[in-house]
Length: 421
Image (cartoon, rainbow, N blue to C red):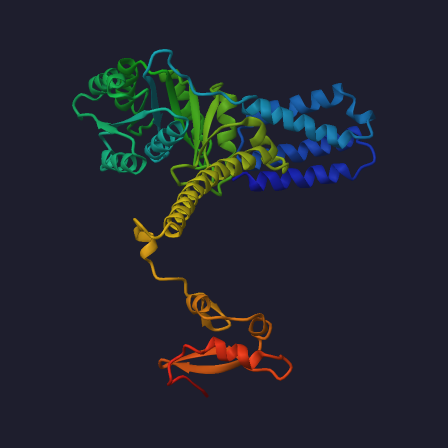
């Protein structure tokens, strides 16, 4: 998402960087291209007009036209304006002074509320919290079963409500959550149109009964301008505390999702970046602005790499602990064996090592005399048949005095049927 917008802006700024100095005509042309790019990305018209006016005013006020780095300054001004449009800084989720913290999710049908509820529970669980999921969607078939299945995958408890007393059951469950060991309650409500008065009354009753600390609207990032209208209607009815941009990994233009914050004034707190249950992140306006302007999002990549590194380090520590335990056991086995074999453990009853040296078993090398002359000529081999098996042994060398005598000592104890082939 936002790739088309990012490509258009990159082309515009690249052309601007090719100028020795930025004239007022160059600035107007660049802002015109930025305006077209934002509108093609489905950003709200009022938001685009305000953004372009802000950039132009700041560019003229900072004397960009007189600077030899005018193009870079224009890019920075556009970046700062987009960050302000998206909310400025990251807004954390509220947390109750006295548990539990209650979070209610609302939104249109198909916006991804149920999956987002499970993702949010997983995110909070990784932060050391103990979430409880409440399945309050009694209208969509199998919605409760879906949330129950997701809860089992995460190891998070799930409570369901009855269809005839949704608000009352939600209030009862949230009231008993702290006694059950949960410090956060996430309520998944049914999807509804903002023009459906009956459904809007139902969620208003749920919010009134649960008294949530957060009322989050899940916005489909692939939706068009209707997402802005529905967000405004939900905010007027429920007093939203935050937004969640779901499906931000799609290939839609996504401009409408950038407009919701500017139109409603409600901060975006979370963003969904995939279908997996760990694909939910805290929303950082500056990082999204950097991605849109083609600057990359290094901090998010670093955080993901650090999370993977922490998991890998934990696994290595477990393997290292097991390896040290095995090494200590082996050292103990050797000590027992050196002391006469009394009280030998099971590990000592394993067969001797069968690593070969010159084709001869190590246990036979320990029992049979081998001289330095033989060791120095192990590269020359001759096949020996012994007990029906083929083995290799050093062959005599004419240049090695005393080697024949050494070989006779080596095989002195061999059975009579041993022969050279």
